Length: 112
Image (tube, rainbow, N blue to C red; front, side, top):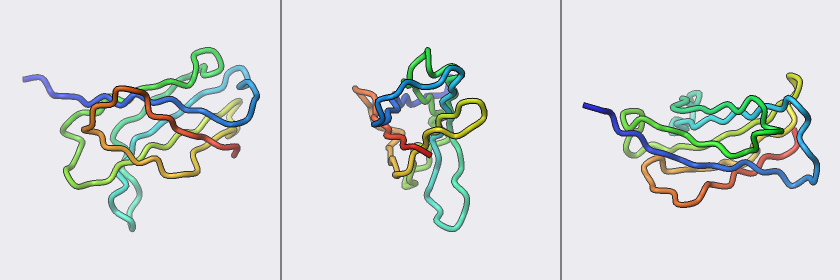
């Protein structure tokens, strides 16, 4: 039997009107953030190695077995260039992994 996966399309964006540096990489993580006194548990991640050329759209493929009913989930994104943090999420981007998303979720990243 094949396991079911949920799909979460996303698009990171920033407000500054600048181009990303060459060799910029985007790192995105979907985390279970249910427990306030424990580290978040990553349930899916995505890496775009050359984000300056490939763009800032990404998609999580989440195994249904990783989603626990009643838990809270959030997306975090960071963009690095030459091993230096350039942009990062500073707000909580809550998400329901089981929902059907017709449009990509917009994820704001801010200057680090």
